[in-house]
Image 1 (cartoon, rainbow, N blue to C red):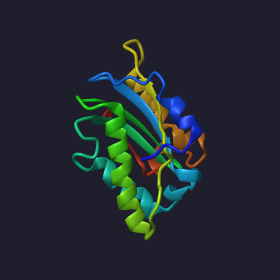
Image 2: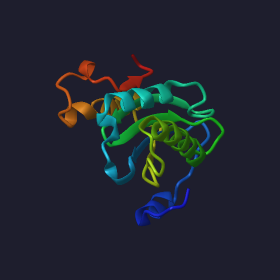
Image 3: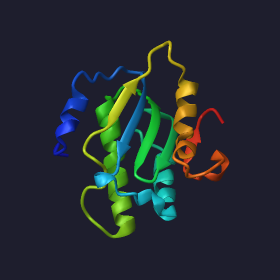
Length: 153
């Protein structure tokens, strides 16, 4: 996928994929279109995240789908972070575009990543991720938001 967002090259500077490393990832929809305000598309993306092999050999620890972006907490296997995320975005874009009868870019061209250090608390980051719909005032109680999951349930 060609890099057309001038800031996306800067996102890759210094990126290092540590095998077995845990990463907090954020990626947005192209032009920040709120595709996931549509319940059926949110369900489709949720099913895609839950599907075996959607993250290659990485483990999805936590996720939340917001109207125009996605947050995930992932532990890598042996594949690089870029390969894992690009595969997720590519496969989901094909399925989601098919669902809405369109072609073209679905996701923005880059992604933000933060490698968790040993002293950082993965459960604390997961809580932060899951609380996004609360901070965005989409719901008053996370139990009423359908598009999230965590291994710590």
